[in-house]
Amino acid sequence: MRILDRYIIKPLVSAFLGCLFIFIFLYIISDALSRLDDILKHHVGLTFMYHYYLASLPIIATQTAPIALLLSTIYVFGKLNRDNELVAMRSSGLSLWQICAPSIAIGLSLSILIFSTNEKIIPAARLNADKMKKTLEGEKNSGPKEVIHNLTFYGLENRLFFINSFDSKTSTMEGITILEHDNQQNLIAKITARRGDYKDKLWFFYEFNRLNFDAQGQVSDDAIYRQEEITDITETPQDFLQQKKHQELMTIAQLEDYIWKLRKSGARPAVRNLLVELHQRYASSFSSLILILIGIPFSFKIRKRANIFSSFGICVGISFLYYVLTGISLALGKSGMLFPFLSAWIAPIGFSIAALKMIQESA
Image (cartoon, rainbow, N blue to C red; front, top):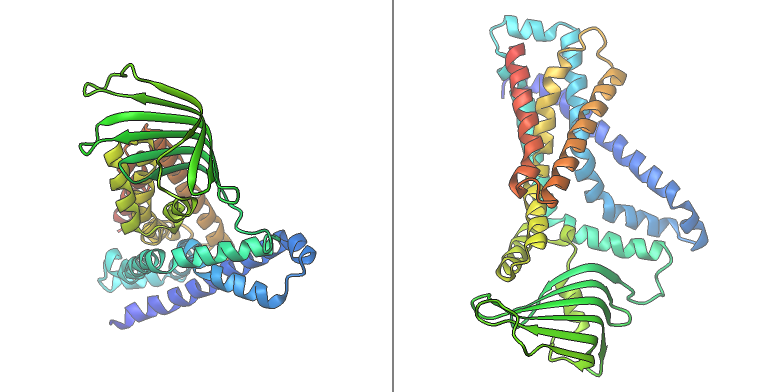
């Protein structure tokens, strides 16, 4: 490693670690203050709070690390520019890309680390933190109460379930739609019911309606309607809970497998939303690299006022614009106005192109 690389990397890493510590500290303080009523009401001890935030630490760190790296990059390069050290480096024959290479390498390394952490650590950490959060909010003795809304579940015998709400405590489903397919994934029946209760290891459906479809996809004449019907569904409430993982608790492999199952059933809106989530997993992991690229040329613009306050202001502006545009594009993707891949990558690609162009113009 060149001496110049170490000269840039050392203050950059030090500033990044300092910013990351401050962001994590402020996040914990603000979160603890927002939960102060629950802490006092349920007599939560310091030991429990310590373990709760320790479990949440990987989640907080991965969320704040890209912004911390952006802030440290703007500050360090802005200071080098103010002290005319960048001019001296370029006068020695170094190109702007050679000067920026150490910081770009740090951004790439952090992106890879965040991606690996999101896959291997975050799902278990989030699950553990959610359990402790319920205890913190006074649900410790309330039993396994959980209401899942808008449940999409691919079950046995090529059945695709769409359920408005599922209460695991009472084993009750509301607003039920079930699509049955044959082995070639052709629709053969559609079942709807207002409510379903699990009693004596059987599902009882109320206001049960079944429409059968022929080979041409037309509704046949043997439609069935009953006020109450005992179904042949073999899934138990526990099966629904085990299969229904929140998207943030799935790894990429699990998410891809779930998308594959839903695709076979023709659940296009659910598949589209999951595809947006899948591509966003990859795109969000590279936020550190993208933000550091866009931060470098901005740091060259604060020659006379390279302090932590001006750096923080630029950091806030860039981060706000980046995440707002990302949120808008994701919403457009889930609504079907953009392709899932494009909705996840349009902001990162756009910012990367703009950053590379700005760096090239400054070279």
